[in-house]
Length: 495
Image (tube, rainbow, N blue to C red; front, top):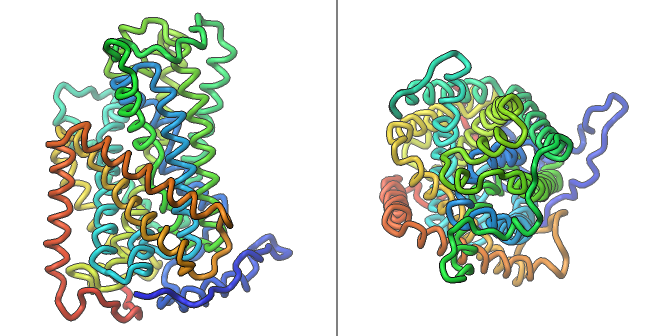
């Protein structure tokens, strides 16, 4: 893999009189893809809104706050609002911006895997980063399925008495998500748009209800209440660990990049969509967390609850609204499952296209509908396997955040080298003289975040991630020696 020559300017993508994209822009995308060494095999049908939706739906900020705010409360109570404000800003305005610029330079399925390999020329490192993200997306799919299974089952009057009761429902949700992805990118885009609509509805409804419906509210000073998590005034360490919360809520920064071979004007629109989705999610998250925290009626009960956000809404604005919000949030989370799976499929397919995985010839194939069919089935199987360990879901979720953090830490580090040495090919999305500063800050934040994640559970998360890295090394060595580290013919057959 090597740095590619200057790319065409894809920023002139304009609609014709019928409202469809100018065919010339799509041809420019195809020509650019050929310069990168590949032919156009996937359907290039996504516009800016759908590309935005891939990232925004993967984050699912409103519904994720509903299920994940407990992490912040556990470390720093209501004061975790400040951890989100600071950590989320670092997450979005350093790593998010840096990855977006790299996606603009290399708008390819595979995202971080492609970027790392093309900058460093080290296929083994590229493969490892792709492997980490493959595991992260697959575990995330399973985590979402398991977390929403009890709610979906409840819609059909089914309740769980044991954790294992959720397994068939979770597998059913994973299979349904796979069927949507197998139906084609247009069908997935519809699901994606539904997810965006559900997220927006959640946000608007929550903000309106918490602002309009009369209920006792806490003073602004309550945002600094640690909920009993701070001893002897030593608040800095809990504040730091609570910054893990935005890592759970806002990640998958190369999601639009992984879908860039299906996006029109990808070199401009994929990074633009990613930045818009990240920043809007961050802003929405700030307002949502603040309003939810200020609506707390009984802090000790909230700190002891397994579902603190639902308890807060129940006591502040009533069970009816809480139930409606919950239902819409579940729809949004299912859409997130579909988008996370779509991204994982593209990572696996991109590695197979380059021959950088055992069974590449089978995994690289696409169907007559231009869907990476076999890669989708493989991700389905991996997600089901992870579902069998649903009792370890909290550990797997933390490992997912660490896998994302490590992969993005590597790519922003090699990206900083490319930016400082001016080795990136021409790309329409960049930050001029500010770019080096953004990349340096993104490296610093990635180091802090990974250290916090490992320190939070050294045995399970730290050693678990080490096991993932070792497994990746073993799988990489299983690639036939004549293919390891080399691209293979991109003229792929169809199923």
